Length: 87
Image (cartoon, rainbow, N blue to C red; front, side, top):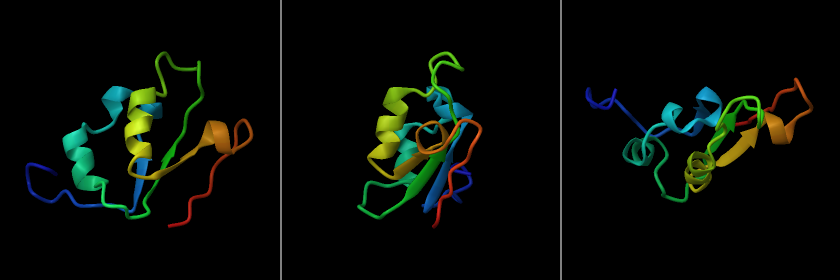
């Protein structure tokens, strides 16, 4: 999408691969989809600390948290639960 010039800002990002560093766009791409412009954006992650080696990646989540409010199934729901995100 970036190479085709169709990558655009989003209001919501589903964080992929349980928050791994290699499942999330690098900073250059994050700047395009979640720019640091003060807009109230949201993101969600489905994860469970210890269930997947090295996930969620703290550096990855910290970078996304600079750009969006992050809802986390591990922190914001009961085991096996879900999070509701209103955009």
